[in-house]
Image (cartoon, rainbow, N blue to C red; front, side):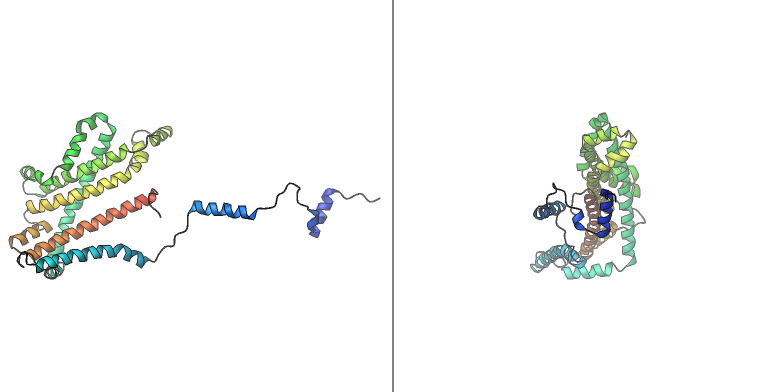
Length: 315
């Protein structure tokens, strides 16, 4: 008498014969609710947020450029209307076209670019010295409470002090030399850098500090890996403000302190003023303005990248 096929044998035979009826669904298996699945998928899509289509590069550049061009056009129009009103003689306030003609001839000369290079060398050197000094002072003040009580208010007072007030003392200390200009540039920028770092450290969440302590971060390691990165957004704002102060201090210094044997942008502007050449004076004003705007755009670019990395802006 043949043996009754076992359950395993029947299952194997059903698989080989691809018999769907051999595998009835369990009694407690409920049919899939497609509508509910669609709703869950919709919630997932809502959580992820809609995908944004990136526009063309040329269109994005135009959208960010045309407001600036419109502002420039408005300023030039007001300037031209003021000239046509004859509020001042034409040799005192020249027309925009005359100034732009002088500016075009100016930027094609080698002497002009030599002056720009000297001015930018002074600006970058003074700014980096201010960053170094301001960072050391800011880190020390934020770490030691007695030091903050002693010089915390002094730093803010130095920041609000007009830089031109330091030039008489700078000339007495360093005579008419590069050191006098650097002295004022550093004093103008370092307090802003220090205050930016102090403010950033003050707003580091206490929870982060406790987590760092649990992970064994102490002393310099805590500053290197936790406090300084957390305070970076405020520190960048302090750097941007420090650059503005150093640039203004430098321009004032080049107008007041003429170092023998050097011809910077400020010296050339002063010479143009002595010659009563209004068009040349305005041309150098435009040059200083353009340099300041370009440097500001670099800081804005760095700040935007930092905000995006911290998730403060949309990617």
